[in-house]
Image (cartoon, rainbow, N blue to C red; front, side):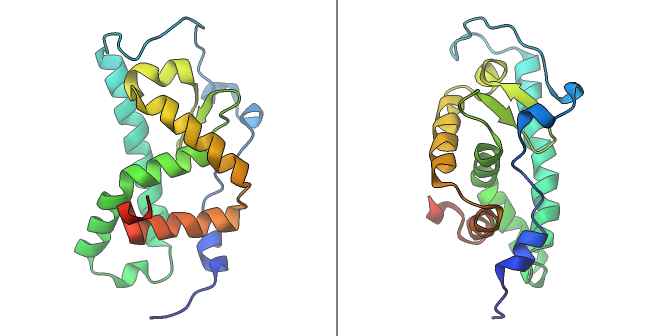
Amino acid sequence: MREYSNVFVLKRHRPVRDDVSHFPASFLFQYEETAVSPTQKVDSSDVQQFYDLLTSCTEVVRVWAQNIPGFSEFCLEDRELLLESAFVELFILRLAYRSDPDLQKLVFCSGAVLHRAQCVRGFGDWIDSILEFSQSLHRMKLDVSSFSCLTALVIIAGKSCF
């Protein structure tokens, strides 16, 4: 197996941690600060929002993974299996890294920035766990290079990382 420096993985890693104040207003969705419970009835727009956020991330992760040195050497079926097996972990890891848990802002692959209150019905019980994980991840103060390597490791190791 070839050895690759983390520089290659880093170069292929899309910048993911941006201060939410630098996003254009079109990416910031307005929300009302009302108490929203995860047990409230979920309507179709909540499900659609959740689905849209996941699917936009799918393509970003797929393109990023194809650029990891050596990844394209796996057969297509193995690449698909690795991505499918690790997708939820990758989605949460990347979301947690980009997000600002102190402000309860979640920054998605598409660049959309949503407040926790906007996600609670679509994400259910996951939302608080994601924000707690984000807080822990931020305390580690990972640089982009380390985070890129961690993300590549999650693709290869999948659920055994967690």
